[in-house]
Image (cartoon, rainbow, N blue to C red; front, top):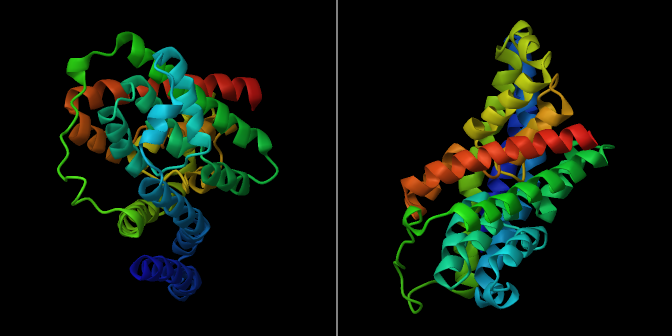
Length: 319
């Protein structure tokens, strides 16, 4: 526990020092572009770290202290009914997207229908309370953006669960065997500390990379090129949906990255926040390693398409 606290404090301290010294260094070098880069970078990183820490604490606590049998008892055997219940469980059972893949794998091994487990895999990192609160702070005075994210993300998770129940094949899904026995697996406080250390440090690295990429995108890409995309609602939405896959920003912090992408439509920013927690490069790699490449390719491609359609419809209707 001590190491986790020290690690979190160190990351926050580094972000704070960088936010103070960065603009000073940029001014000393007489480079307005660098000063602008630091401004965007620190705004995204410093705002996102507290929510990242809170999200990983909650996720680690659930993984360590909530028995997995709770899920099997609460979910009905009928897949059509289990999918929306499992998807809605993401609202009250938050989890980091990095942890959602092993959690879904564990649920399947314990008898939960794959369609329901996959719906939870998609919804937990996308619509949990930490993510929704972070979104409300990143978009102050815009409650429709928070509601839009909730509706579009939940709809995507449920639709993907139903699609898997209808069209999924067992040979596409490879479930790994346990590498540890129950006696050797960490439990309780040890499991909490191990999960917190892994999730926070792992996701924190992606947050820093995402903040740097967002700042670079805002500064380096000429406005004339952006005008080509921002002038078209379709092109801007597809561009941010693609960037969400590449940037790999943690769901607890992606709202701050989206808010910093000025010039894009609200629907395009919504697509960035809906796609990111469900489909990005690190998640595709995790799914391929856990469930097999055949599953990862099919499931990620279909999820991206459903998320884009869902974001488009919700953005047209609500935003």
